[in-house]
Length: 376
Image (cartoon, rainbow, N blue to C red; front, side, top):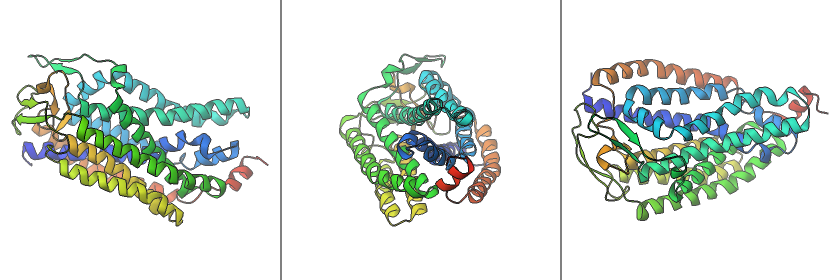
């Protein structure tokens, strides 16, 4: 079995991979829902938009479950602090996510335009809220969250939901929304035809530079206007005790971070991939455009994780109470057993997901939607 330090870093990498998997797969679900009323101008077109994602959205939820489960089992201190401190934000996100299955199941039960219009608006909100909340959460990580541990390692959170809505996190939230919309439009371009496809291609040309502008603004603000955290002393192979280290609230997240240089590289990849997305779509290479938007999503999350390393949840009240890779994990044996289980099960999940997407390949025809639902 690998040593404790190696296992901790391995699970930090796996956590990032699971978050990226969730953002890439479920991200285009959210983007499509948010763009529903823009991409579809009548009931048939909106049905066609929804049918691009209906066969796969439930499977995409696996990544959310895997990510939450990994945090719970591999990083219990992070799970406890984050789910307590961000309680109302997470509750709002879960309520928004519940709208999707309810909306898909009930939207078409009645032909009343007011009924369907109401569900269309709810699905739009469902797509926007989680993307905004996730982006705001990442922004708050760089600023630090108001938590502290006492001598008995009881955590206290002294903030509130509205305290999360600071200017920098709001900027990162809007950047996340733009990215998710770009990703959703790229998927619709892969799966649709006719006027819906044309609208998706036009949106890509607007959303790509919008995301890049917001993302670069957030990066510039992070570099010049946000004070970072510096780990002074820590035991890499010791038991998880957040107070057994020294942390300074000083420095720069990008310039002074251990992996800050790699974060800049990941950010450059994200920007290049985002700008390539509409160019590829313009050449009718829609699958390549979706791959590019997926790389943009992965690069964006990767840049944030690399800049934060080794911090998982910095504390603005007591820097020493900040949670890091070295002091928020489960035991050595637990991480080892979970790694074995992951190495066995994760390839199965990936293989099944690839098979489902292959079976469900092909475009959704607006003509077929109208004919099959008697919309002539």
